Length: 268
Image 1: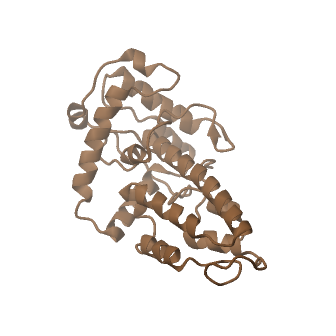
Image 2: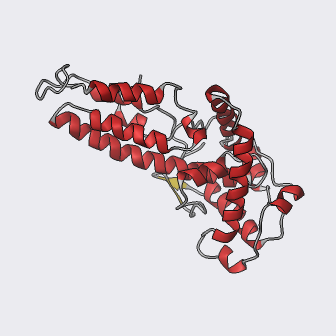
Image 3: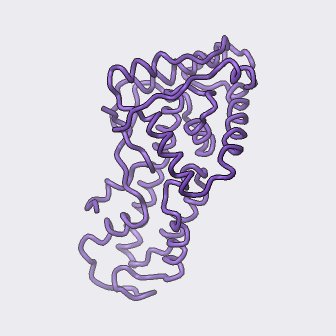
């Protein structure tokens, strides 16, 4: 069990020590994915062409839904871990070069430019969870980012999928910082954390299926029980208002609710 709050603020299911490289798009994939030439859209400070990306996301979502529809929680969790092993490859010189060499099988300048932007973002220097280059997938929703990161159709390059996963992790970390700050405030003022558990449950329900699968299968039901209990963590009694603070209780509560993961934003 980690004894500091900061250790729980990373995203879910990321391991920077794993190696592996995903496959690039095939000619068949390129023919299926709707592509609209728009050279201007590829050269606006790292922005993504919406028309092109929308078609890719629609295809990716459909492909993933079909492949995952018969999988249970354990199978989805295993699949998610396998995919993350690939896209969060260990950053050895050989792996970095291999991923950087991937090029979308297309003549569309938008897709070619976006792949270059993703590699520039991944391979550029990083400080305080921010890259020196813009992430081409910044601004997308968690669902859209998941569709890119966990796509196995060959629609996106390895570094595009990694960049999408980084953005998803950044959003998760941003949310965790806020929710833990609010939880600490609630603990110090009343000791009752029911609102915290409810917010965590609401957040979990909004996560994409592949990310939900990386939590314990009973995660939602456990949070529901905590909410029903309406427990006061400073006094040990439901609905109580005052008591002495138990040493180390906040990290213990966070550890039981928010999975701890390594920081993927500064890969070695």
